[in-house]
Amino acid sequence: MTIQERMQAFDQRYGREMEIGGTCWHYYRLGRGEPLLWLTGGLRRARLGFAFMERLSARHTLIAPDYPPLMKLDEFITAFDAILQAEGVERFTRAGQSYGGLLAQAMLAHRPPRVERLLLSSSGPADLGPSWLVVEWAAIALARRLPEKHVKNLLAAGLLKVVSLPEEESKEWRQVICGILQDELTRADVISHFAVAADLIRRRWVTREAFSNWRGRVIVLSAENDLTQSRKDIPRYERLFGQVEVLPMGEMGHTAAIFNPDGYTALLERALS
Image (cartoon, rainbow, N blue to C red; front, side, top):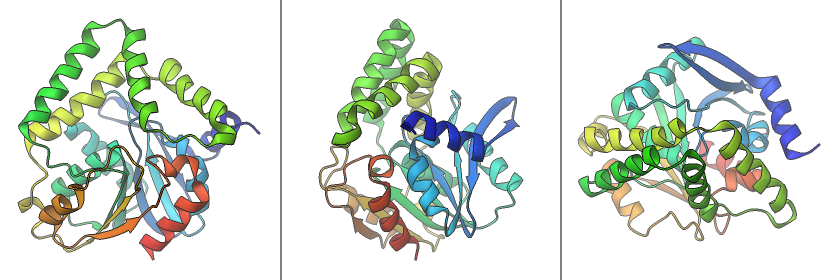
């Protein structure tokens, strides 16, 4: 089967839909065991991680939403809560990869009690300062004014810079990623990407004080060759959460969840044990 066919089979087997606040949310539920809410990255489609999720589902229940083009952080958090409630999940591990890590931190700051562990993979601290707000606003303005084709091309160029494609499947994966960007995502999705991040920064939810009464574990997965990671990330995480467990990913890159499912699942099992 091709990668596209395997993703379609995954969607047909595990995909679910739920209307929340007038918006249709598409998400996946699979597996048995301890629940894990998986928040995917900037490509906004959780099925890209089908291979590692199928492996991890042997011991864990995974719930993984796609992202519709909403503009407010509250709308995302309300929807995540509604999906978890509908699936009967009360206590769980929250995991976020890349962009999903920012959402995971914001959700934990807003709804801390039910989360036993926070797992952040290839994602930076979400305590972003006001200077980042200017960057997000500029990106929103650009996304609104440029022709939609150019907006998508800019997003594709940015995302593909940090993607480490496996050599033997690089052409096929590039076609899959570009297909999602060109055929599924819209201008509104691109604006949503930046607008929700801007909302997070503006609200200043992610602070040391927000986590002062939370006693869960924080596990950070970081690769040496990930261009989005900084040496300052771990000290910043420690200022936010106190004790942080760091799990090195070697040179698995930014997108190990997608392109190295065996190695990535082994790391996750180690983190969740």
